Length: 339
Image (cartoon, rainbow, N blue to C red):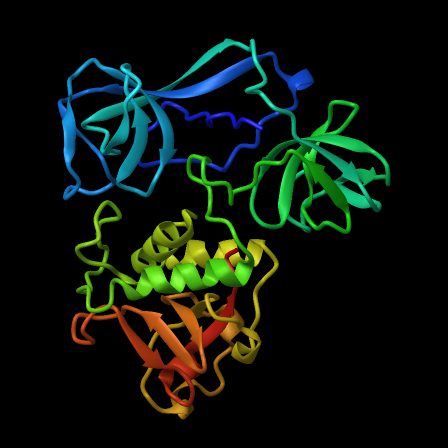
């Protein structure tokens, strides 16, 4: 089954929204393709690296078709002559837009879901969101997008749009393009949650020793603060763009219903959130109501009582630390999976 190239809004090249699943053919009669117009002369390379051989320069005004976003820095594109290669995502080189053309082929392949067991149909992608109604076993829906690992945005047979669980005990899918599919523009890498977690960890470890900088730029990997590092590890590892700050990342984990206050319940790849440092002694944190504390640090749990993070210039930047029986354990607020 051919896959539809995802739609991009007219926003800066580095910003991508949720992964979009191709709509069923009866729900749309057009195919939307992401295109890019070269703003300034840019290298067209054989690989997603400045070390890769240059095919040629793309000139200002040239148009390309964006096939995928490899990471924050590179698009895979097809030039007007049919040649495929890689260009920078920097908006000073390329401007993205979308073109809708009549659908004359099977490019707009359908994605449908059949309800297996009665499930809540909600107004938002959260168990806290208001319930529209229950979808009954046997009902069919059109899957509009996969919001994350836990929620589909769907259209019911009556035209109402809402959100349902992705759990296979509630819904059976047909032709669904999930964030794991490699041709998705901005989607996450495939595999199980544990496989994705290991990809995130491996991506993060590549930055060991990278210097710390508070408020570091999200547009390069020369320096990191804690939330920038975590965001980059997920972006490089599985293509998932987390919120830019630790509090936003904490809220995101909570929104998925994954928050755990006992660190023993965490798995490798889970995020861990901490309150302010008040000293190395456990007594420094006694009597504190942690439910009222503000997140000031985030780390990636590696398992076996170890964390991967960056937190100060003096610490040496990105590093691995022992967590148990140290101030890290005393400062811990909650943690959980972002997948």
